[in-house]
Image 1 (cartoon, rainbow, N blue to C red):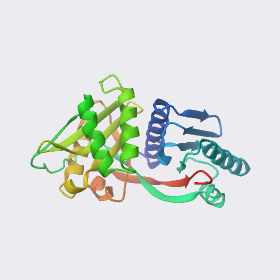
Image 2: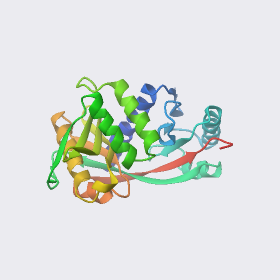
Image 3: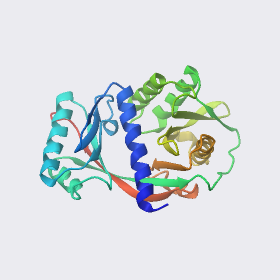
Image 4: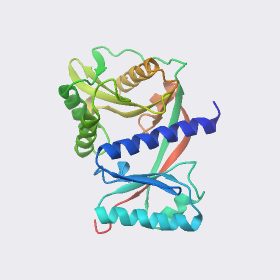
Length: 266
């Protein structure tokens, strides 16, 4: 598949993921020909996000100011996920010039699911679906100890998942890895469009790292995606996970530039 098509797969899945979580979380959407963003559904800046922009140079500056004002009004942190399809081409530099902070880059990766790259088994590890409130509690505890912004993000994410539902009728699948009965790892799939599975919230508790558990739960998620009829998997990688994902067959297709902003006065 050409690189451009693979980039489009990533952008479409990530965009739908952020917009859906924001919507379920109670956020509001702005969607017009120039910009798409979600805000107010989350206390986490990563999830209050600009996910599409196609604007002239002058309008890009105005949109950046409008986004900043929206965050200030709500007293929320937010982010602009600058991707290859966004315009103008110098959008990142324009955002930095208007006071946004450089939040680094996130490698966007794609794997062909027709090719299997199984991870080595981990003794005592069992990976199963999140089907009950108790399962979701275990998922939350792992995220709280091993992902992103810790307890605040874990609480919001699992609240959203509970609202979405845990059955087969939704395009979400959540898995928990248990080592000798203790929840130590998580992974979530979000299917959009029907042939593409986004891999999210891959986390391992600190004491269980460097044992191949992250690779094992990701491999199980990829098997789940194949069972759902997906032909590609996409994800955004952390520095810690990059080498693992490469070994599992993911290729980097571009890097998101994350431009972050805290509300004025905080």
